[in-house]
Length: 427
Image (cartoon, rainbow, N blue to C red; front, side, top):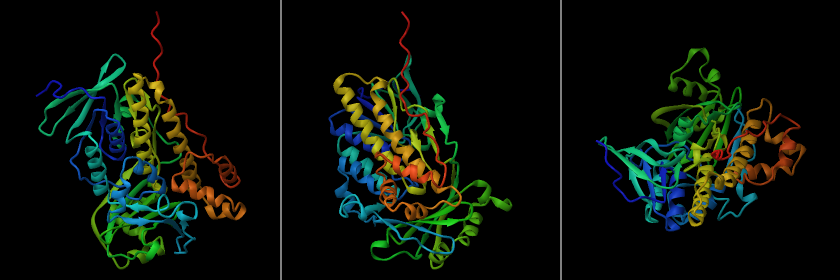
């Protein structure tokens, strides 16, 4: 059954209620705009991506989430640690060596079902209309311009909603980029991950209890170890498919349990715990959209770009893009101009951050490379590395990348992220 538009028109429609969508909705609603969020699932729902890096603080502060985070039971995170296969650990990168300990330098390890629910509730509290279990089926267009969406409710009914701007925050699904042929794989980064959860396993103490640990396995693979509240730990292994499926092993549990033995630190940490829940698998970690916007449409969060998760940049970039795009839309609504060219600065800012983090990730995967060797030759690089690891990704890192290139090649920036501005019609 198809319903006509059963609501007043909106100033903005947001597809997806994850971190990017919820943060954009909160900002726009706070500015007094009529915002509709259409979310395919019913929250709370499971999602991976549990480690927040320090520079999530600013967007969380912008949307009023910091008091709620400080009052939560989420585990506090102050550092990231790298561990060799034999269990030898490097000195942790403590964020408070660069930033204020009570603000930016103190982050959290979150259960995404709870965090995302809080984010969406925050958007609701600011005035956004949120409709869950609404699956967007197509973009509505007037010529080349997106003017709204069609969505299917849980009962199968179709609805149309209209607005002068639609924000695609559909995450890995990348609704608009896929349907427009904009989605591109990263030419250098293509890993798969297998992960699960443990209860009762070992974790650090005191200030190190909440640290993220990156523990190496052969061929530049690695485990993440993320302590969560409730004595739960998220543990996953990331590597090339040919490595994880060697000798014909394809069962996720078998892959995971075999890799535990490839790192003595991980083996020790998990020796006292018990695995709980299922094993999860995902692939194609790194992807990019050729364009950030088109007439009536703009992309944010993972729908715009997503990088390999080794440095946990996903939620930070999603939050940052949600806030930035919402501010750009607010300015456009006030000015009466939401043309795609208005989002050029937004797209450039997000791509700069993505490319800086991408260089860090690419260097990490190069055989024989380590941050330690760079710091030993260039002690001043330690601060820049910590800044990038922390998510301060829009500063000038040209000196750091020159130092990295003494050890490994780094990729050129990808030519993505500009808005798609149609050619003027010939008269």
